[in-house]
Length: 284
Image (cartoon, rainbow, N blue to C red; front, side, top):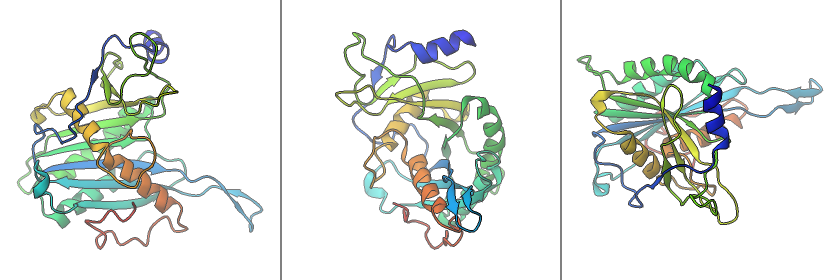
């Protein structure tokens, strides 16, 4: 474990890397219709309460985004099929979202009347020590929601996305950062397949990549880790109204924006009519 931590935090020049395709279409290897799920939790900062005379902790809010993609041809995707829900949480609690995720995915499949052939989940806000616990809670809940009337299972890939990491990459000669869209697979975790995507390449600083940890990938999905990386990179360019760096796939980035929006409300977003807002990215 100590050797792994040394490699993770101190080696800056990867032995090899490749640049992901600039043709940002979704990989055709992904079976459609597909369900893309993004999950994030927003923790609101403490605010001063006049009544109590001190700063008071506000509840956290979890957001789940479900996006349906039915065709590889852009002309056939005539309208956005997005369903979203938020859930109030005890402050600082990232765990125990299984029931919330199951509810959101089940509602999305019912509203959009879709029988998916595959599902990819991106989960943000999880550190290394909690990956096992979160995966154990959430993957069965997602599988239960995806299970069709005949009990058939849907192939699933579940990824944890970490953006606040210490790892940075330089070019082989050490003179510059890696190019935009660089994929690094040489640095692997002790338990799960891992890849890094260098989503930004500013000229005068060293950017932090995003780490993608594949906590589970069904063999029935029949896609490589490179395909999952291509899909993640393509979805980084699939959302609008964002002025920051491109680092996260759109479902999890939208979950972040929705959780922050709901977390800024006094009631944690409980008055949002989720079914009425189905098919609308109202939080952008």
